[in-house]
Picture 1 (cartoon, rainbow, N blue to C red):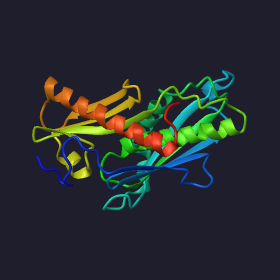
Picture 2: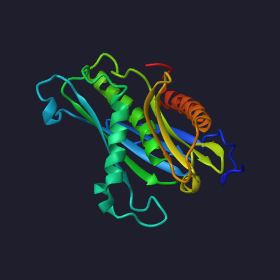
Picture 3: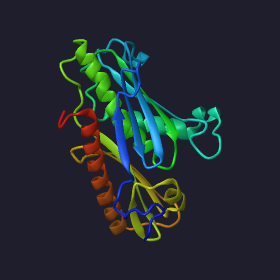
Picture 4: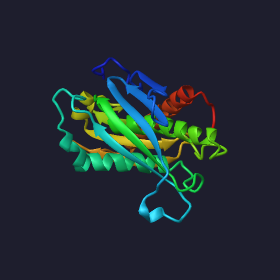
Length: 239
């Protein structure tokens, strides 16, 4: 099935990650997936949420927002309080905490701000992929200050969308494909191939085990490619 942008079903969109793009943030990354662009910035806060005070442990959390003109029609800033926004930022935070040793960096909180500059599908998955790079850089800043011996990260983590459109499994859906998809799924996985989260919905019609297996295979392949881009952007081969 020909795709709207000419890709093969198993191809990612043109992807790029650039780190250290902000002057003041302790860590930052711009991730681009086709026409989707997400700016991720890490802030180190020497305070933790009340439920962690006195425990000696840290926290990683995220905030997510779509900029008003990230889409064809202006998005009101009121969306920051929407259920969708809250759900996405909780997803980003969970994904990062899954690969972080929270006991290793003291009573500090690292906040990842993920701002969608342009949206063409896959904004939440792009946010996770870019936020990992910003988080790594923030930990490197703490290491440079002598507060850490090494970034307390157990593995890489990245995310990608997959779906079924007219009985064809597709990797990394753009907005037009996502809007028409029979099945829409987001995969979050570690560099070692372990699953962090699966979000899948039959939008138009149910899907079977064979279709699920095909989508999972595409997703795993795509995430390995994205982890390779993370390594290239950070200039590392392993943690």
